[in-house]
Length: 63
Image (cartoon, rainbow, N blue to C red; front, side, top):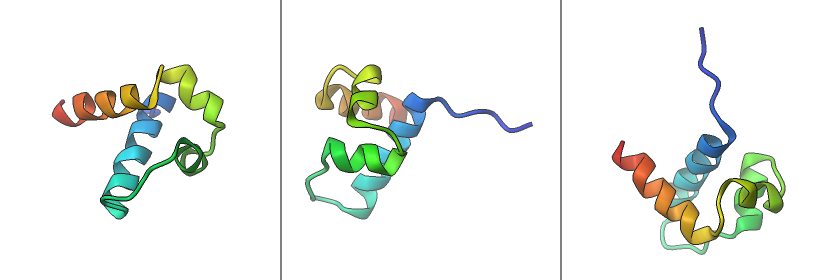
């Protein structure tokens, strides 16, 4: 059975993907939200700030 990926994990995966395909480029919350298929407000329901998204990505990558 396939495990359902949480929205938070989807956001982190999309953020990692954006960093991978556009290294050194600016990543906007609007672009990230579009990649995930949610609104910018939905991003902030899961993360208090853009910095917290990057902190969570580092923790996610370390696991």
